[in-house]
Every structure is written in structure tokens, then in C-alpha cells.
Amino acid sequence: MKLNLASVALALALPAAMYGQDSIAAPVTPAADGGVQNALTSSASKSKRFNDWAVSAGGGAAIMKTGSLNSIRDKKLIGWTGYFSIDKALTHAFGLKLQYDKGETRQGDVSTKDHVPGLGGRTQYDAISLLGDLNFSNLFRRVDSRSAYRWALHGYVGAGTLAYRSYLQEPGQKYNQSLTKEVKPFKFNSFFAQLGGGLKYKLTNSIDLEGRLMWLISGDDQFDGSRGDYINPAKINQNDVMTGTLGLTYNIGKHQSHLFWHDPLQEIYYKLDIAESRNQDIQVCKKGDADNDGVCDDWDRELNTPAGARVDGSGRALDTDLDGVIDLYDKCVTVPGPASNNGCPIDGSGNFGGQGNGSGKNQVATEVSRKLEGIEFDLNSDRILSSNREILNSAVNYINSSNTGTRYTVVGTTDTRGKAQYNKVLSQRRANNVKSYLIRNGVSASKLNAIGRGKSDLKYPECNPASKCPEWKNRANRRVYFQQR
Image 1 (cartoon, one colour):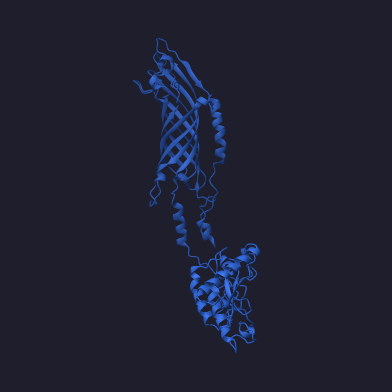
Image 2: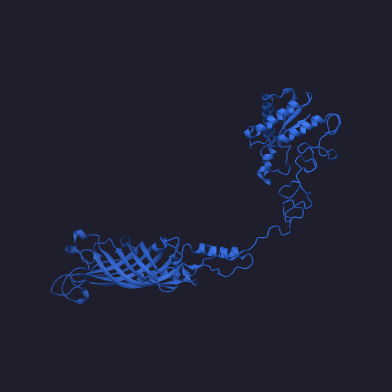
């Protein structure tokens, strides 16, 4: 049994020990050009500055605390115990231990090793357990404490498999001792629980000294060796062992700090120190902005934009009505017209807007178009937004002040999402709603006509499909505007 369980423990421990190397390291050195970011991220999950594997071993005393036979009677009978574990720190406050325990307890009125008559018991045990390790000192460490600490309180709890042999020496004139029970490891009745605490002291960056008190709960009424009439009914299933040990922990790895001794705010302090010690200017617009349009030449698609012209995100001068005359020089920004007329349309008599007969009509149409430039709609909606009513009310005044014979077409459009037929109907509803609003507020119905053009009349034609443009451009395509007839 001893050789078998020890072999299993060694087989489980060796792979963990071989893998138990320090986390991937990134040297903490002054950063070169652009190295602030590298320095600030040097403590990321793939570049830690601490170790998180360790091995522990120790030994000490063991007593049968409870049971029909116990170690604390008239004569104090002290046994021995030892442990070896592979330790993995998962966070600064919690880790796991794969631990192997071995020991022997003596209990009863006499010690069986003295070979004297009397009632006595002896238990030899081997155990493998998985323990959770809670670092209370790091868990409750003051957030404003920046000093290193050397003492740490740990709590342990876990379960595993327990193999043992218990013996009983019955009272009589002659020394005698016989096997009471033997339990093999990894059997249904071999499971046990273990809990306790330890106080660690940091001797060096690699070595810790620890004193432990542990409680091994067997749950077996013959673990102490008692049987038959020697079993106390009040002590059934209460055969537990208390151990006190002194041991060492070796922190595996080449970093100076182990995760359990690692200040949880150390990384923040480190990053702040790096940020404070370096003052690196970030260069924007390496190639400059030759035309001073606010768009860097690195991504400016029009490097000779005229001074004062409004531009889009790519640095191109805006041409709202797409008539080939940029808004800077366009006298009718929202109504297409030839460059020869400064971007304004030509009226029905062939006169240019602003010249000769009909100039008043074009003047009104231009002003109304400017006012209606912001009439936009939510996606898949024909509802007039309350924010646009003031603009529509201004349009009512413009139209009513125009010549009696002037007619206007209310044009509705959509963006490029959805099917063409659906968008055609939706744009017609938008135009009808605006027309109805104007009529309700005093415009003669004979002056207005409504038409929906769907997605065939885009303010921003480059937004086809819609995914090629930001949402503000798609929203601008969902509009209603005026055309003078």
C-alpha cells in the first residue's frame, strides 16, 4: 500500500513539477521608441513579472484527536507526519495544491511501540488530496499599502483519497497487536476531507517558511484501530487526526516575486511610474496639412482644397447638390444648376436664377431648399420629427410669399437599404406627409405636388450599398426636399 500510493503521488507530481516554470517573462527595461506601450503592458497575462508555481515539503507531529481511542489521555501519545505538494497560484489570493501526506498516529492508554500490556492503537496512513489555498493576507491587504510584507496567513480546504492500516493492542498480561482494518486507495470508502491553516514567512524571494495546523477527517469509526466492544458508540465516524508541521516552500521561476507575495496593486504602481517617467510626444499628421482643411495629408484625397471650403472625412470639398459646383462657390447649395449660373438652376423662360424674369421664384426655391436641407427621417419611418416642424413652418411662409403661379414638387427619398419597390412606396409616404403638413398649415394644395423617388435620388450616391458609409450619410439620404416647377 505504501509503495503503491507513493508511486501514484510521484506520477502526478512529476509532470506538474516539470511544467512548473515561471510564466513567460518580459524584461523590465527602459523602453525604446514607442516602448511606453510595451512597458505598460509588460505585466499582461502572457508577460508576467512574477512566478506562480512552487513545491512544498514539511513534517511534524500527528495526534488522533477524536475517536474511541485518542492520543490525549493520561499519557500523551504523539505520532509523526510529513507532506509534499505541488502548488499553483491562480491569482494573488487563491491557488491549488496537489498534496501527498504520510504519517503514523498512536492512541489509547499505552504506546504500542513500548511493548507493554494495555489498551493501545496505531494507525499508518497515506493520502493524496487536492487543496484550495486561500491567501487571506493578500486578499485583505490594504489598498493604500505600498510596502512589501513578509508574513502571510493561508487557509486550506480540500478532499482526496486515504489509504491506511489500523492496529489494536488489547489489554492483558501479554503484549499483543493485530490488524483492525486496511483500506486501499481510490476506493469508495477511502475518501476523506482535510482543512486547516498555515502561517508563512518569506525567508528569501525563493524560500518560504511555514507552520501549519491541519485537521484530517476520515469519517471511519475504525481509523483509530478500535473494534468490537472497544468502539465507543458516541465516537462513531469521528476518528479525526490533527497535525502540526513546519515546512519550506520553494518558489519555482526566475522572477523576483511569487504571485502569492505579489502586491495586487503593484502593476498599477508600475504603470504609473512608467507613465510619469516618460513624456513622449505623439506626432499627428506626419505629412502635414498642406491645404489647411483639417484633414491630414496622410489620408487627404484632395490636397488642393480651396481655402474656406467645407470638406468631408476624406478631405474633399462638399458639393451638396452634386451639380459640379462646390458649396463654397455654389449660390444655390441644395438646388442643382450649371457652373455658368454659380450653381443655380435656370427658370422655365430660360432666364438664370437671380437674373431677369423669374428671379423671385428661384430665390424662393433656393431659400426653401436651404431650409429643408435638414428634413430627414428615421430608418423605415415616414413620421415627421418634431425637430423639423420649425423648418417646415418656415417653408410655409416662403411658399405663401411666392408668386401665385409658382408650383413646387415635394420629393421624398430613401437610403439604399431595402428593396426598390418598398423604398419607392416609403419615399412617396414621406413626400405625402410633408405635403399634408404644409397644406394643414396654410399652403394652397394647388401649389404642391408630391413624388417619391425611392433610392434612385441619393444625396450621397457613394452610399450604395449603405454599409460603405457612416450612418449620418445614410440618414441624409432619407430626406424630403423641394423642387420648383
